[in-house]
Amino acid sequence: MSKDTLNVAVIGAGMAGTTHANAWRQVGTVYDLGLPKIHLHTIADAYMPFAEDAAERYGYEHAVDDWKKVADNPEIDIVSIVVGNALHREIAEALIRAGKHVLCEKPIADTLENAKAMAEAEKEAGVVTSVGFTYRRNAALAQVAKLAKEGNLGQVSHIDARYWCDYGCDPNTPMAWRYKGPMGSGALGDVGSHLIDSAEFVCGPLKAVSGATMATVIKERPVAQGHVTRGTALDTSNAEMDTVENDDVATFTAEFENGAIGTFSCSRVAWNMPNSMQIQVLGTKGRAGWDLARSGEIEVDDENSPAGLGGPRQVLVNPDFPYYARGNSMPVAGVGLTQIEQFTYQAYAFLQQVAGVENGLPKCATFADGYREMRIADAVARSAAAGGARIEIQ
Image 1 (spheres, rainbow, N blue to C red):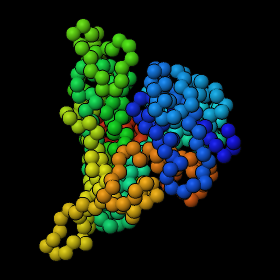
Image 2: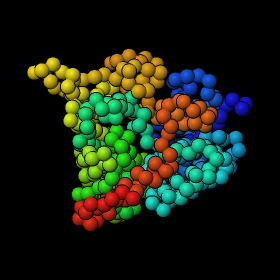
Image 3: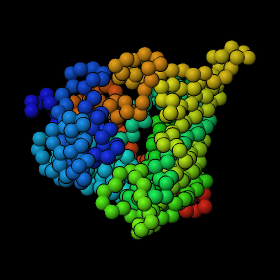
Image 4: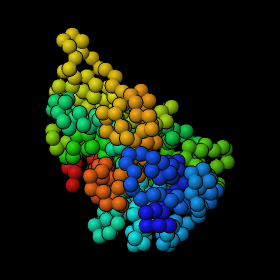
C-alpha cells in the first residue's frame, strides 16, 4: 500500500462491529476529498464464521479469529475495537504499543480502574485514540445542541432523556457478558452511557447526580451451549440457569453546572421498544425535542410563533443542520437520516485527526471523555446504593 492509503481493521463482528465495518467502507463518500484512502484490511472475531461473513459482506480482504493477529500485523494502521467491555483495555493498550490508531466503542471499559488506565495511556500514545459516542454526530441532535448553546431556547432549565431497549426483555435470552458485572454496568453502562454523553453534549458538564434507582427485573438467564448472538432466545426446558448481576433498569436525576436539571431513564427490558432514545430540552424561551425513531426531524416550540399560534412544529433535517449538507448523497429536507450515518461521520472525523486536519469536523470523543462518562455512571451507581443520595461528580 502507498503512503496515501491506510489499512483498517475491525475487532468484533457483531451488530456494532459490522456497523463500524460499514462506516469505514463509506468514509470516502462523504465531505471533502483529499484524505488518505482506506483499504479494508481485516475483520477479527473469536467466532470465525462471524468474521468471515462480515469480511465478505463489507469487502474486507482478511478474516481472522484472534485480535492479536491484528495487533501484530504491521500493515494495519487504524483499528475499531467493538467487543466486550472487559477486553477493551488489553486490546487498546496492545494496539497503542503497536503504533495503531484506536477507535474504541463505549463504554470505554468495564471498570473505573481500566478506564483510568486507558485515559492515562492516551496521554503518551503518540497515535489518535477515541471512544465511540456517535450520537454527537447525529445531525438532528446536533441541531438541538446548537439551539441550546446559542441561546435560542433561552436559559435551559431542564433536560429529559431516556433510552429504552428490549434486547433483554425475553427471559429466555441467554446469559452473556452484558448481564455480568456490578450494578451500573448493565442498562446504565450500555445505553445510559449514550444518554450521559449526549446530555453533556447538549447542556454542558454535569455537576452532581441524585435520586438514582436500579432494578434487576430478570434475575436469571439460561446458559447457552455454543455461540449465540444478542437477542437469541433459547428453549429453557433443560437449560442451566445463571444469575444476572447488574441492572435491567436505571433512573436518576442530575444537576448541570449551568443550573439546569436533568431526568434520565434507561432500560434493556422495555417491552417492544427495540431502540428508543428521546431527548427533550426545555428553556425559558422555547423547547426542542428529538426522537431516534424520527431521526430525520426535530420538534421546536419557541417565541417565533405569532401570538395565539404557538405550539410544537416539525422541522425536517436539512442542509442548515450540522453534518447533513456534505454527509448525505441526497441532502434535501425530507430525505431523512438514520443512526447508521453517525458512524460514518465519526469515522470521517477520526480519519481527519489521523491525517492531521485542524479545521475539519469536531474532533472525536477521547479516552478521557470515556473515563469521565464512567465516573458519572459510577456516581449514579453509588447514589442508588445509598438510597438516592446526592453524589458530586469527581
